[in-house]
Image (cartoon, rainbow, N blue to C red; front, side, top):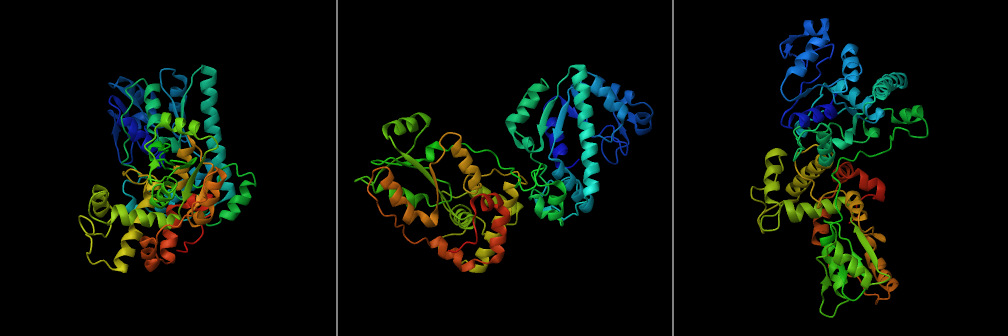
Length: 460
């Protein structure tokens, strides 16, 4: 009854001709809290005979519906489950996550979120008996739905909480309802508390122990609300005279690696601008080729993106995004960006970069209406995108390149060209402001990268 069903309802209502009327059969209110009537039916009339409200819903133009939960009027539940002309959408979620989400809502009083600046967070206490009762009620309602559909020969459209951000899934839902698929999603509502469970439960160790060693509820998973990424084939770079293919992660040492690949050609050129066909042709022409990608510490990568795309004025920067961040997120940077040579203290730089990291956390958590640019997307998501078409043979760390790249060249029969990039001025700038606070913000924003790739503290 938090963001998931609210987001689903908002996107159903955004489809022309579709109308979702809230929790029409909630025993404590009618449609929405504070509403006295729904389609001319009062709460007393509904409670006396739910068929009157169902008839009013059917009589409305277009496709009309509502949300049902396990504790709503059972007469209404029985009526719609038995009606084959009523489309059923079953929204599911990890039971442990739904339990914690509901407890946080009860603690904070926040059931909807439209502005992540106003998000309320809190830690809750896991109660094994309470969770068992929650799980029993949830499973009983799901089994009730399943059996009713089975014995009547019906089917439902099942959608998971995390699928709600997938436009293609929502378009498939519209086709199931036989209405025009939407061209975009209503992103007014934001995900609440997208952090992993262990940060939201004060006695998480007790929770793990109570639910057993099999982790049936995926407690250790870091939630992922990022959009799926493509393979970014046009960004790939190959050496002209060696079977070496770099799969660049935006925000990483792209130019330094490009320079190393160019050293294999007398003219200092590389092969790039691939598409799926020309990439396949390159592979066929370079038997024994190796592809690789390079990870950069998330803190350094976010800082590089901030310094090259967000902070400065001039071409090649995200000017529109910067102004939106200034207005919406209070990003403390000059209007129009920082001009070259303009005064800018370390304190101002740290404050602005810290605010950017807070934005990245909200953005990757699905809490903003802004796109997730590859420049600050998690490296996990970027690498997963590569794997859709061209899984890298090697995943290297930036600090290992001087040792690993010459070895890699030898493996494909090429000269062991040294990798010696020039000093990075952005690293020196980060070192001047680096502290525990920035480390904590980076870890919160990039939890998946930190865990999956084993990143520790940035060491410059």
